[in-house]
Length: 56
Image (cartoon, rainbow, N blue to C red; front, top):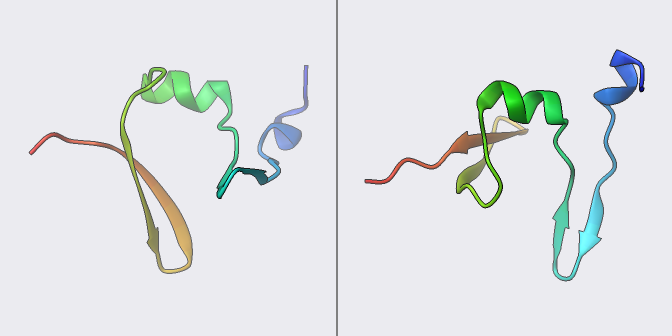
């Protein structure tokens, strides 16, 4: 098992014309997110913000 500090470090990888990074399973479980769930990705003040998508 990885040390807590190492779990926070991720690499950016290229997939086709996009980039991706993995999210630690502990965070996914905390947020109760599921596979294929829709999320909104935004840039705010130089940071990436990922939020659950809310149907209008």
